[in-house]
Amino acid sequence: MEFKRISYRNKNNKFLYYFKNYFRQLLPATYYQKKLTHQLNKFEKLSTDERQNLLLRLNYYNQLKEKYILSPNAEKLAELKLQKANKTYYFDLNEYGRYFKQNHKGHFLFGDITKTPKEPGLVKSRPINNQNTNSVILKWNKIRHFTFISKDDLPYAKKKDQLVFRAKVHSSQPQRIKFLEKYYGHPMCNIGKVNNNNLNKLWLIKRMTYNEQLQYKFILCLEGNDVASNLKWVMSSNSIAVMPKPKYETWFMEGLLIEDLHYILIKDDYSDLETKLKFFLDHPQKAKLIVENANKHVNQFKDQKKEDLLSFMVLNKYFNKTN
Image (cartoon, rainbow, N blue to C red; front, side, top):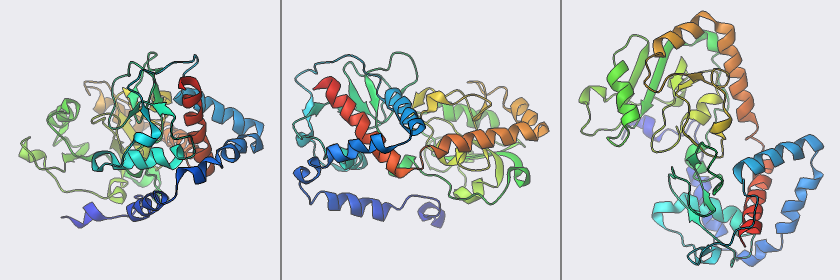
C-alpha cells in the first residue's frame, strides 16, 4: 500500500470518529432523550440573522410541508442495527437520532441515493430537481465527504496553470471514463485513475496527496456514484473546482452553487474545457473571485455547534411531519 493512501494530513481522524461512536453505543438512548428540548432550544439563543440562515438551510434540506402517514414498512429507530456495510451512516444517524423516542419511524435510506423515494425518507444524497421533496438530507458519511483544507499556504497566483485529477474510475462511471478518453495526455491536464482494473492501463497513475493536488490552479470534480466527494475540500482551498453542472447534492447544498461564481462550469461533453481554463488564466481577478465565493460557501459548514443544532432540527421536522 502506498504511503500516500494512508496519509492523514488534511483528512478527518478516523480513529477518533470510530472511538466516539462506539462509545456512544454504551449509553442508553433514554439518557439522551431528556436533553432533546435543551438541544432544540439553542435555536432561540442565536441572533436574528443566524436563526434566519439556519431556517433557510432547514427548509432546503427538509422540504416537507404537509403531514404524511408513512407506510407500514417504515422502520423504528430502535430497529436499526449496526452493520458493516452502512456503519458510518448508522453512526451519523445515531449521533442525533438517539435523542428522539426510539419508536419514531422513518425510511432510512443509507448509501448513494440518486433517485427520489416514493415516501419521505432520510438520505445522504438526492437528485437536484424540483421533485425531490421526499428526499430529506442529513449529514451522513461525513467522515469521508466532509473534509476541508485547514490552510492552503499557496496563493492561487503561484499555482501551476493546469488541471489535476486523481480518483478511482470504474466501468459504471461513464462520465469519468469519457473525460479520460478525451483529455488524458493533454498539455493542460495532469489526470489519471488510481485504481487498477480492466480499464485503459495507460490511465493508471500514482496517487497524489491533497497538498500535491493543491499545487494546481484547477482541480477536476467529477461526480462518481452520486456527488463529487472531493468538491468540499477543493472549495475550501485556493484552487478552483472545475466540473459540469452537478446532478446530485448532499448536506453541502451543491444545488445552490452558481456556475462561474463558485466553480468553473464545463459542458457535460467537456468540449469547452480548454476554452474555459484559458479564459480564467487570462482573467486572474475573476478566478480569485471564484476562490473567495467558494471559501465563503464552505465557511457556513465549519461551525460545529450550528451543524449539530441543524441536524436536530432536520430530524425533528421529519418526525413531526411523518409521525
